[in-house]
Length: 519
Ligand code: NAD
Image (cartoon, rainbow, N blue to C red; front, side, top):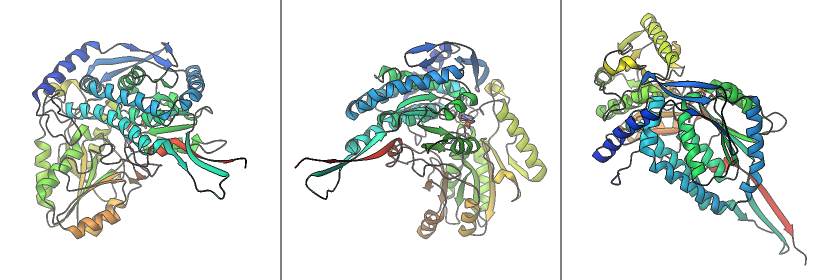
C-alpha cells in the first residue's frame, strides 16, 4: 500500500490505494460472513453446537456460527497443549522467533481484509480496524525483538571458584491460556499468544464470543507461519469456556483481558494448590485534565477522539474530564460542538468515525445511564439513540457529554459508551485528586502548556499509561514499542505493560543452574 502504514495516531488514511482496497474488502468479507467455524484442538478440527454472532453495524448480518466448546473439548485442548509443550520449549528460541515473525508478517499482509472482518465483527472504523490488525502484528514483533535483545535470556553468573559454573536461564511455564475481550479481538489475542509462544509455552486461545472471527484469523496466521498443531489451539464459547480454562489444573499460566470484576475473580481463583501467573488486564475510568494553561484546540480534539472513538469502547477511552474553572465554560461549549460535529458517515466508509455500541445490552445500558443523568444531572449534548440513515440497522448512540453530581456512580463505573462526564475544578491539585479517586488506574491525559503543571501531573497521576497534550487521543492510542500499555490499581495485575520492555519476562520463570565441574 505504497508504504502507508496505519497506526492509532493516523487521523486520515490519505491513501487512495488503501481506501479502495478496504472498500473492496468490506464487500468481499461481507460475502463470506455467516460461515461455521470449528474449534482447533491440536490438529483436530471439531464441529459441534454453535452460537451465532451478529454485526453491531447491521444486526441483520450474521458474522458467523462458532462451535461452542464443551467440558470435554476443554480437557482435550489442555491435553493437546501439554503434549506439544516439551518439543516447542526445546525448539531453539531463534527458530520460535522466526516462525512468529512470519506470523506477524502474514497478519500485516492481511491487515486490510482482516481489518474489514474485524470491523464487521465489532464495528470499528476503518482506521481503527486496520490499525488494530497492524498492532496485532507489531505486538508479536515486539516480543520476538525482546527475546533477541535478551539473547534468549541466558545469563552467565558470577562464580566462587573456577569449577563452579552457574548460568541463569528463563524457561516457559507450560500451557498458557489467552482469554480475550471483544474490543481488541485481534491485538489482544495476538499479543499475549505471541508472548506465550515466543517464550516456549504452548497456547490455548479463547476469544470473546464477539471476537471469535478475529481470533480465528490470528490462529490461522500462526498456523500458516509454522506454529505446530497443539502448540497453538483455539476454543470458542462464552464465560463458561473461559471459566473451565481458569479452573483447569493443566493450565499453568493465563492472560485475561476484560472487565475488572471478572479479572479480579479469575485472579482469586486461578491459583489453587500453588501460585500460578495470571496476567489480568482490566477496565478503566480514564480521566482527562485540562489545566488553565491548556491549548483548547488540542484539548477539545484529544478529549473528543478518546471519548467517542470506537463508541467509547476502548479500555483507554476518556470518560471523565476535569477542567480548570477559568476555561470550563468555553471548553465544555467547544467539546459539545465537537461531539455534535462527529460525522454521520458509516465506520465502514472513508472518514467514518462513530462506531456502534456492541450489542443490545450496551444500548440498554446507555438508556439507563441517560435516564439517570436526566434525573440527577444534565445531558449537555447527545443522550439519544441514533436511528436515521445507516444508523437504523445498527446499535448507534449519539456522542454524549453530561454533567452529574459528585456522588453519581457515573464518575466511578466503567460504562463503555461514547459518554463523558465533565466537571470544573479550582486547581490542578483538585483535578489530580479527583482523577485518582477511583479504583482504576489505566490511562490519563493532561492538557497544559506550563511545564511545572506537566511535572506535577506526571509525578502524581495514578495510571499506567499517560499522555500530555495529545490531540490524536487524550488517553487512547498506545502502540507496541512506543507506548507500553498496562494498568495500575484495579486496571491490571501485572504492573508490567504490553508492548513494553518488561512484558515478555512474565511468560518465563527463572532457573539458576549451577554445575560443579570435576577438577
Ligand atoms: P469481559 O470481561 O466480559 O470478557 C472478556 C473475556 O473473558 C471473554 O472472552 C469472556 O468470554 C471471558 N469471560 C467472561 N467471564 C469469565 C469468567 N468468569 N471466567 C473466565 N473467562 C470469562 O470483557 P469484554 O466485555 O469482552 O471487554 C471489555 C472489558 O475489557 C472492559 O472492561 C475493558 O476495559 C477491558 N479491557 C481492558 C484492556 C486492558 O488492556 N486493560 C484492554 C481491552 C479491554
